[in-house]
Image 1 (cartoon, rainbow, N blue to C red):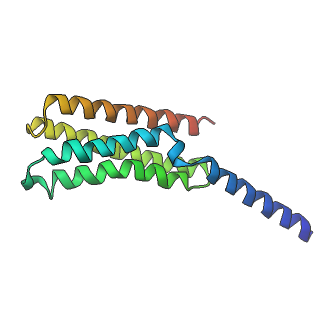
Image 2: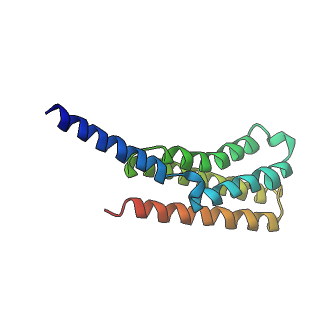
Image 3: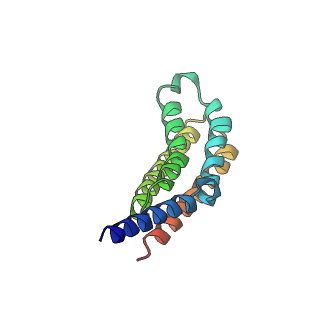
Length: 140
């Protein structure tokens, strides 16, 4: 009896270890795109926002943009697809926040149409990738 319990625990530990190994966030295309999007926002969008926005729009945009790749990374550390999907859902919500913050920046003439088009394309790519990944994880 004791040997059977040990074997079951060893199998669960092996499965958990394989799951963590399989979810190396740096190998995920969605994380790569989210990371590039964050860097673009940090380097090319945020510096164009006026100082008086630093506690409102700038802070919110920074938090939301960073939240996307961070939630993908955190989800990679979870053991089940359901838990992973929860973090991808959160990343998707942050993607929508970033989308709106950038739209507001355009409307307030803080960024040019060209910058907005570039960031909007990145955001839409991340959104589409997250939705596809979520559909894959929830296929059953």
